[in-house]
Length: 89
Image 1 (cartoon, rainbow, N blue to C red):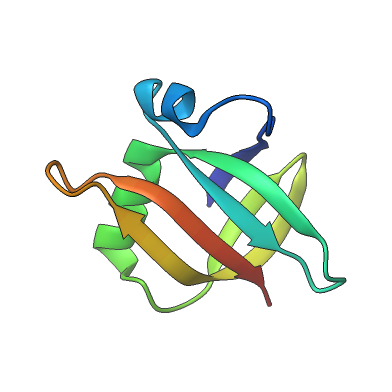
Image 2: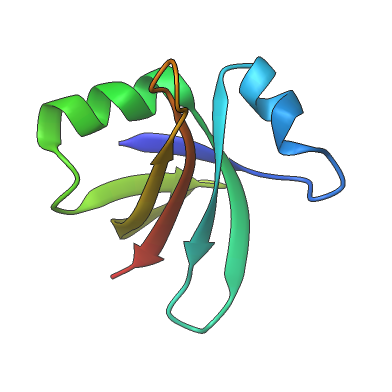
């Protein structure tokens, strides 16, 4: 299970990346788009273990949401995940 935090849109994504976090967007069933940030190392481990396919349990504010990956972006040189888009199932 991944733990995500709500992301403040006033802060630049670079600040989150410097802290080792990946930024992203969670698309809810009701049409709401929620900006999130996830610890990058946890996300890398999950992707290596289970791949990009399948269901990911995401914990956001004490609520567990089943999601799947829509898009994944990696850094060009170091191949860390820098952005992820998720869709609620």
